[in-house]
Amino acid sequence: MKREIKAVGLANAPCFVGGVHLLGEWYGCQGVSALLEDANKLRHICLDAAEEVGLTIVGDRFHQFAPAGVTGTVLLAESHLAVHTWPEVMTATVDVFICNHTRDNRARAQAVYAALRDTLAPDKENFLQINRGGLVGAEMQ
Image (cartoon, rainbow, N blue to C red):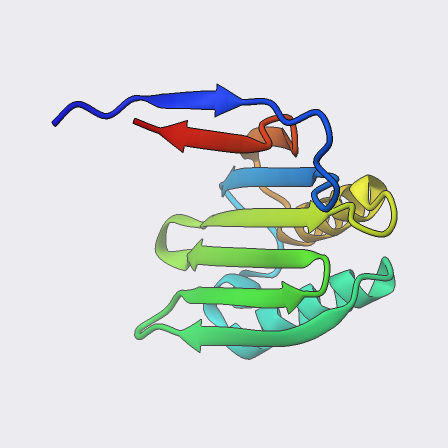
């Protein structure tokens, strides 16, 4: 069965006002190596960064892998922050999605992303910014 996805623009989308989705892959992280290895330390860095810029934390979950590595998410009223680390190769990925439902949160998203990048201090970075909300609906056939 062949399925095709068509974009459908809705001019009067009353509830969804978009947001920004920042995706980063960080290589050669030169920051405190314990942050890549310790779920509790990385958790506090992520929570502090989100709180400092005025985002609303509604929960979090961080998991410690053995022998090392972390995966974690911070659930925000505005959406989420996710981070994954591979300390054996000094690499981390980060995903920051912040919605603009009641206010423009783009600067907050960028500030959280920058704070984490500055803390982990990668030598190299792949970065992608997606402005969410341009595609309001999709119909599959």
